[in-house]
Length: 282
Image 1 (cartoon, rainbow, N blue to C red):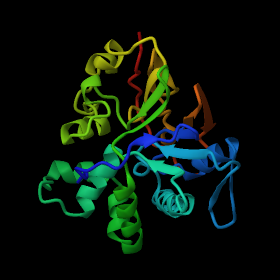
Image 2 (tube, one colour; image 1 turned 90 degrees about the vertical axis):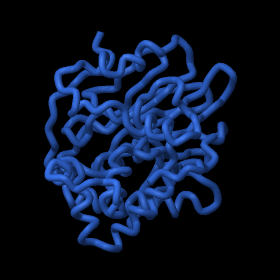
Image 3 (cartoon, rainbow, N blue to C red; image 1 turned 90 degrees about the horizontal axis):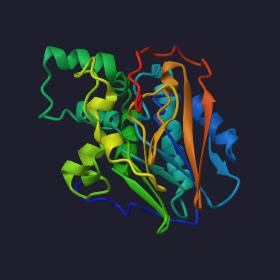
């Protein structure tokens, strides 16, 4: 379960941040995205930034949906580099995703997670990492360490005019960057699209555009698997559906500037499939 005590969620404003959307086992695309943005990766799979001021943030949902092989590689890559990059001070940050929450509940045998036939179908369909970890104790322990390192949210404040709050999922303003358990869950998972089939995202999550403002205090999130980066005013979704064969995208924050980059799906595993429900489809 999520810790009720949050670590310091304020990011050093002197760093430049590469903020990556939902990876879902697309570790090859993650490596390429890092290489495109001033990082090198050595023969031991260790990340080396071109500057001591460069840091990485992953926005959650690191695993699931990809192949077993690539999910395993993703866990190994994140685990070793979290330790490597954070030896002297933190340069690698992880945001909690709803898939990390559910995997932890499954593998820890959470007694509140009732194993109904429907739940077992969901496990097989949406959480294929669980079976992998059930058969690989060492990888399971690494995943649980990664889980313990995750933040519910992070915030970068450069000035009174420019800031960015990072969460996995969009949420109402009243929950954003708050330190209570209800807010944590709202920042990690929004209303389920699979349980609201046929309802447009802009109706299901109306607060996402209704609370948006024309300013440079941004809220960047993933979770919603879009065919491209979707932005409305200061609300930005950067989950561009790498595992569905589209691209892995990132936001780049340096001082008071915000830009984006992406890597197209590299075809190193079979893509998953979905029908898009567009955000900000006005």
